[in-house]
Length: 280
Image 1 (cartoon, rainbow, N blue to C red):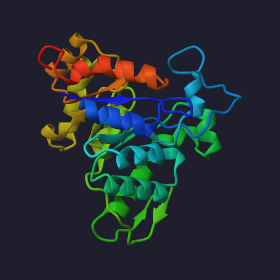
Image 2 (image 1 turned 90 degrees about the horizontal axis):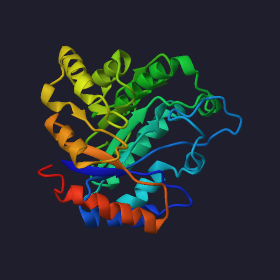
Image 3 (image 1 turned 60 degrees about the vertical axis):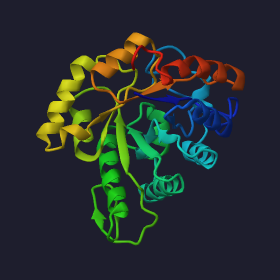
């Protein structure tokens, strides 16, 4: 099983370059970074996990800039977002960012995308909350038009692009969708993605068969579906359970902390990379 990590990198944590080097040296599979452009002070949207919103949400580094730094100091480490708030981006600019990072890293980028939870943040980007999922779907289609081998036009409900020369092209175009299990989410995954980023990984025994059935009904190759449990606090039993379900990658949660604390946790997690889960 490939063991990757995620962390809220901020102006107060370990740096992207130091973390990336340490991850690659220990054999970790990848680094996934979250995204929040800003957190409005006058908030009405509750924090999904309950309680006060943690400090790091309002201090998050731009994931594409940070991953660019990580790419420059590594050779094998996978690079991903978990997640990119696609509705909050201009899709033509985002397509260029993704393609550039994937090209410069030698095809190591994974686009983890989601629909967001913070209504105020999205509103400041001009996002209409009730249509955000359709907006993301539309923007993904527009980006795929720009990534096509030949100049391809796209006319959608929320945006359009003329047939254009747009290089570089992403090497692998790996896309995973984050969110809670359900028919709407699974329909998005089956339509334009390669798999699912289930936060925490709970309930996979029940939801995986449903997603696999939807995937097959959509005419997708059953062998290509990727499910990557995300922001997981690991135990040997939990990772062994994932392996039994056919999971090939899991993303472990690191604390949003300074170098010393992060490296200490990395050393603890390294036992999973080295097979310390009893065969996983």
